[in-house]
Structures are given as C-alpha cells and as structure tokens.
Length: 408
Image 1 (cartoon, helix red, strand yellow):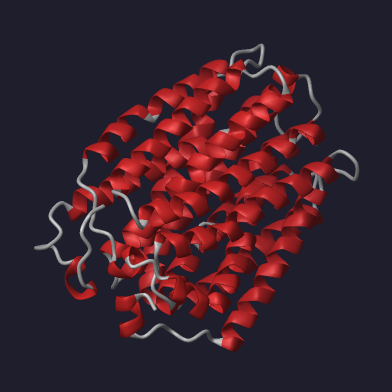
Image 2: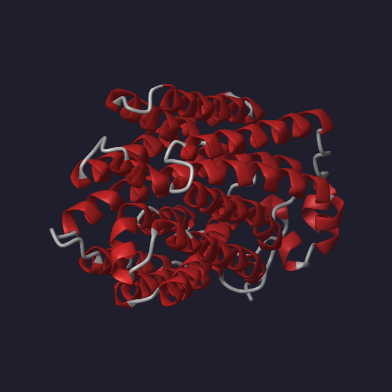
C-alpha cells in the first residue's frame, strides 16, 4: 500500500510528481471505457442473431452488465483505498479487453450474460477508480478536471459506433467489431499501468466508515441522482439504434451513424460542461440537463415518424445528458470526503439506473411499442428532478476540514 499524507500537501505539484501524466492516463482509460460501453447498442441485432434470441430476452444482458458494474464499483472502490490505483485500473482494462474478445464466441444468452457481467465488473471498478483518484489529485477546482475525465469517456463512446459500423459485414456478424475494440484497449492498458500510483488519501487509508455513516443522506441522494442520470444516458444510447430501425426511420448504416451522433453530441456536451462547471452551481447544471432530456423525449413522442425530430431529439438528448455524471460527482465532493468506498456506494445508484432503465425499455419495446423508450426516459428524468429538489431543500451538511482529514 502506498503511504498516505495530509490533505493540505497530498496534491501539490512538488509532492506529486507525474500528476499530469496520471491525469492523462485516467483520461485514456475513460476513452477505453467509452469504447466498450457504447458498443452494445449498435450490436444488439447482431447479438440477437448470434444467440438466436429475441430483443426482449436479450435485454437481460443489460441487467447482467449493470449487476457486474455494481459489484465492480462496490468491491473495486474499496480496493482503491488499500492498493496502488494504477495497477488496479490497468487490471480492470485487461478484464474488459478479455471480455470483449470473448463476446463473439458466445452462442447462447446464458454465456453472453456471464461475459457481459465480467465486462460490467471491469467497467464499474474502472469508473469508481478513475473518479476517486482524480478527486484525490484535485481537492480544489475539481469541476473542470472531472468534466474533462468524462469528456474523454464521450470521445470513446463517439468513436465506438463508427468502428462497429465499419467492421460489421453484410451478414451482420459482430465478431470483427468486438475484436477491434478489444485490441484498441491494449495501448491504454500499457499507458495506465506504466504510471506511478498516487498516494492514497488519508481519510480513505484510515477506512472512513464513520464518514460514510455521517453522510448517509448525501450518499443516498447522490445515488438517486446518478440513477436518473445514467439511466437516461444508457437508455438513449443503447436503444436509439434499434428504435430507429424498428420504425423504418433509418437503415443499418444510418442507425449506426445516428448512435454515433448521439455519442458525438454527448462528447460535445461534456466539453461544454468544462467551462459550465467553472461558472454555474452543480444544482443549476443538473436542472438544465434534466430539462433538456425531458424536452428531447417529448419532441420524439410528439412526432415519432419525423426523421428530423429523430435526429434533433437525439442530438439534444446527447448534449443535455452529458454533464450530469461529472456534475453529480462534483456535487458529492462539495458535501463530503471522497474515498473509494464512498464512490463505490455512489455508483450503486448509477449501476442500478444503467441496469433497470434499459431493461424496462426492453420489456416494453416489443409488447407496447418503441415509443415507450421515451416514456420510460421521461419517468426516469422526473425521478431525478424530484431527488434534485429534495437535495436542494435538505442541503446535506458539507464536511468540515477536520472530517476531510480524519475521515470520521
């Protein structure tokens, strides 16, 4: 375990050589995270064909992946409080690459579910670790750096559908696409693994269970906001491809381009989030984001046959949902000391949203109609707005400097 030191000198440039290189390695890892996470949506029809299953039964893979993410965030988050962070992040990338390479070899939904669970575990541990380590490096002025981290996730998520579209042949096989994405993770593994690990924050090294108890309300509300934010993000990202094909609004190539446009808008939205975080409060940003996603969903429902509305709504939704996750994490950092354990609990909320919202959409998509994609997203966003109002009214107490140092 790396030695810990006081909060006041943990993150100064003189005491933390290589901080910029480590930050860049986290950004690189999140490009890899985006590549992997955005790959499932455009390959859903191919996965259904490969496993001989319907879309409704295949929606269980979202549950498995999110369950793996939840487990990875909880278990992996605690490991970052005890062991070198760079090695842990590199290991999660290895797990994700191996899982991606195995996806084309699964001939049944059961096997695919097991592989997606493993990939989700790696994603959860990587997400929890990247956010935690970045917070430890930037205890002040975190907002722009955090938005930068999630911007690079958007870069990977934007590129992923383009790779998938270019790599899928006319017979619909998804093997080459997954193997290319697996290989693309290799340079990120090397870059992350070669950087020296940062020192563990003192409140994390001292196992701040007391801090978690003290801030249970904050953790619960942050988890609720992440549930809604990630639920909307993944609900759109994973189903817009199949939605547009089902309504004959696009062909296969255009559907992949539409998915990429969503993640491209998402990436642009996270880039906008960097200056926005420096000028607005997290609560204001969240209100703007939730309102934008709701407006996009209502537009889709108002004219479901319009190609113009499809593209405009997709782009608006991508921009609007983009800053939410980084904003919620920054909001949490304002309220309490952040450890890997705490971040793991935050991501219980995000993984639950990523698990339940796409699954609910999948259950209703074939039985009630594709338009229920946006009814579900609207309900999810309404829940987020309710939690945001509760958070604003209760105003959880910000941790004192003493509790940030001692973790109690």
